Image (cartoon, rainbow, N blue to C red; front, top):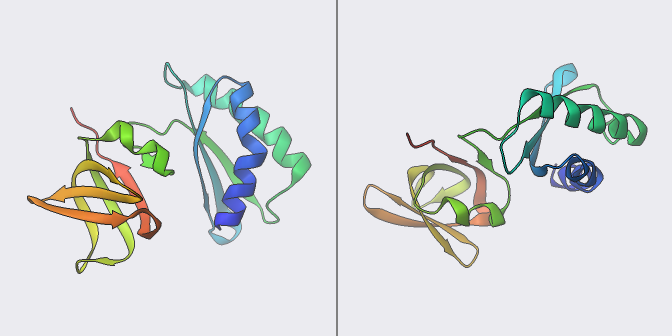
Length: 151
């Protein structure tokens, strides 16, 4: 899956940038004949529904020509939203001090789900404080990290 995500990113990032947005991340969810390719885009002033439609048109043209996914799928273009998933280590620092949920592939100190305050990065580890205990989670072990909106 990482190879597909990487090749998709290389293919579509220039088109997203040409529309004035940043490619935030890609998710390909396999579900038999109902698979979904989700492309998250972000911009300095946010993203509107019309912006998503424009990016979708651009990406559809590229994906139709390049045909990187052999099965049928639905293309969704969306803003990452306030409860955004973090796809790259470089996306983490701007959310220091925010509440987040981290799910790991393998247990860290006997647990796989952490909901707490993101304290920062230590090398390639994400440090999260949960119930006054700090957990250092290797980035490569993170299955999904998501910001919890603060109101």
